[in-house]
Amino acid sequence: MRRLVLLLCLLASACEGSDGLIGPTIELIDPDGDNAARDVAEGSLSVAVRQESRVICDGDGDCVAPITNGDFSLVLPIGSLQAPTELQLRITGGEQALFGATPAFLPFGEGIDLLAVRPVMLPAMTCRVIDPPALTTSGALALSRPRRDVAAIPRANLVLLAGGVEESGPSARVDRFDQVVTEMLSSLAPTEATIGPARGVTLRDDGSQLVSFVVGDGSSWRFVSQMGPPAAERVTTLHAGAGFASTLVRLDRGAAVVGGADGDGAAVDQVSWVDELGALTAIARTTVPRAFSAAAFVGGEVVVVGGGTAERLERGGAGAAIALEGLPDGVGGALTASPDGAHLLYVGFDVDGAPSAETHILRGCPDACTREDGPAWPSPRPGAAFLRTEAGVLWIVGGEGSDEVDRVVWDGSTPRFEAGPTLAEARTGAAVFEQASGIVTVVGGEGPEGLSRSVEQCMPAGLDAFD
Image (tube, rainbow, N blue to C red; front, side):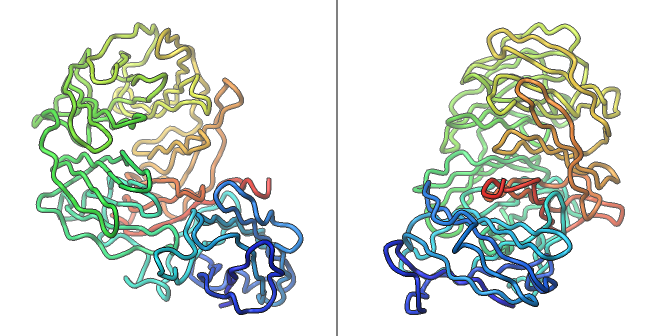
């Protein structure tokens, strides 16, 4: 496999010769781990390079290399070995253009060379299972055990995949996915208690300390790291009933754990507020008991909907009802904000045990919420996973027996549905997260053949360097 090699080449130099080859190799792979350009007889490779906010290569001129019979060679300038570096890549000349991207990584840090960066190259708006056994220590890029309802928590360039449900029951496992090398690292030691089906969020990621929070049916955990694998600490201070039926909302500092279910499955009427270190700061009441509600952080407050009611939660305090005529008596789903945060869409909820095609737009929240009918969801299905990307696009992924993906995009204040890529595997209860590069990754879940271990990546419609 040909490798694209980063040459340490300060911008004032001529970028010639090979004396400066001390950075990592960049291996452009396909979903099977092979040379992504191997089927390109005549084509080109374009690369954009950004270090911090500075664009060094824009995908044109010296940042383009010819490809002949799958072979290419390109040396790229970078301004520093110790500045966060991002790449966006495009291969043309095959049946379809292929795109790839990396999260920000340090080419050389703490005196240790990063051995390889492995962006997976995919056509736009496609999903592929990633399984490069020759490149991974575990023999495959997959969960350590098949499971569903896993909490996915991106933290810097590692993603924790915690808890879930295995064939044998609630899981205590925590896997780690490395976005830079596209590899599943060795699992953390199983926690001392089962986590079970879970939800998670990163509370703090400021470069000096990483704090992630997992709320599970079996137990809740705080993961803290500064260097090396995170240390796990069990959390026992949340309100009774906090777990998978709770709604976990990230705030600008900390999180709210809203509602949940008691041992008999009945909804509870409490909310736990935690700070950015995962410490409990308050427990308060919601206006009604809530399980599997939908919520969003908007205007400095948490807006919660579900069960035919809505309310606003002030930081650290109790709920205050919002009167919204026509709000459905639904549970589940997602409450997603427009990119500017001015409007909300309630979508994907169940009514009488079946997914509804109805959606509802909320405007003016949290101070003066009003409701109006939204666009119909074209393909309602139970068990779909929801992900709001950094760009404000909602991905609705899979569902019971489904390989469909829908996306909600906003035209100003108006939301609309558009068809997304088709999953490589039908799955419900999958973990879905956005990588720092903008690629959407889908992990585990349950399909027609049972529980899954596999990881698939979905390339969005485009990458901003080439738009």
